[in-house]
Length: 162
Length: 260
Picture 1 (cartoon, one colour):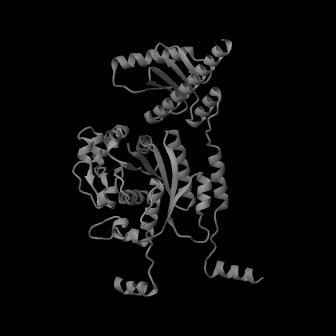
Picture 2: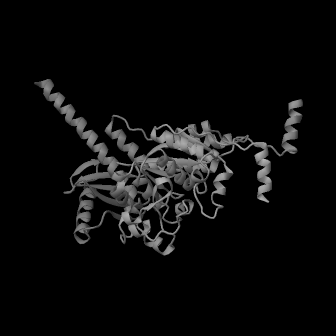
Picture 3: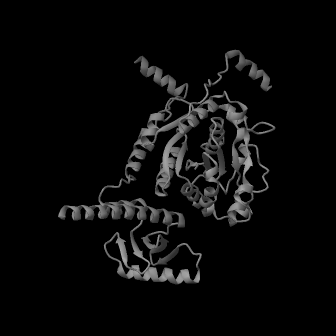
């Protein structure tokens, strides 16, 4: 009773109705939990994580001749050949160009060359050059790790068979 | 090779530029070679906080390719060095902020720490500054809009490959209902590097004939002492024993008369 009276006094006379905004804090916690990007040992799973992290629909990595290194969707031969041809043409006309962005219907195709490979990204909205580079570097890093694992596996197989 | 740390918040008005200036000086006081870079190319004001507004060559000139980075480095307070951004709006429109990363790497060998003051928001200039850094230190306030923007900035920094190392909570008043240090740490999933109290001395530092950061003008103020602790935490070096000077009753009373 006394506490209630004191609380009312505080609220009305001292205007002290301050409370921690708990519902907003819960909302933030929920928001962050949806943006957790943890890589696993599985390369295919990591590609899905990367897609979610950079908010893109799909990506494709090709060699400079258009042959596919990796595809998030498991296909993309046409896009690979078209993308590398387009990049090669633009590079011949504008040697200093860093990336190519193409708007087609409702989506964007973005081409970014890195370490003798072409990174082709498809997304609903365009990525800045900085974001595109960050995605390419991260994907290139994953490819390196995956290649190292595969080499290790093969070496193990050879040693076991020997 | 310098540790390149972006100081970012997402929301404007969190005091991130003030923290950058004071933290840079605190690191310098700990014997570190420090370069401060005003990465807010649109709304540059780190130079105003350092009291060094008249710099003939700025980051704008370097980003435009019209000057060398070393020509845009100036001596700041307490041995800190500083690259200001220009105040000109004409130059700002022509600036290519994507070159920032390359410019910083030209001088990174010469410093222990390069602190990049990042603009508010998540526009191109912000992305450039975040991607030019290896690490990001968040600055926020104990209010929900500031925390929401810090969350988004953290996600963007991670996307760009910058490791978010921790958070500094600024303008802490320890009032009832204020979001606590633990809440912020849990929500952002980051360690708290420091809780800088609301300190009128910070504001007073701008009300001087010659503006200088609070850590220079009042090194024993509450905010200065906390910033020294943050510098100590970042470097792992022990900060000199400093006790914030609290005003006694009579001092407070006399200061009232002094104002008049």
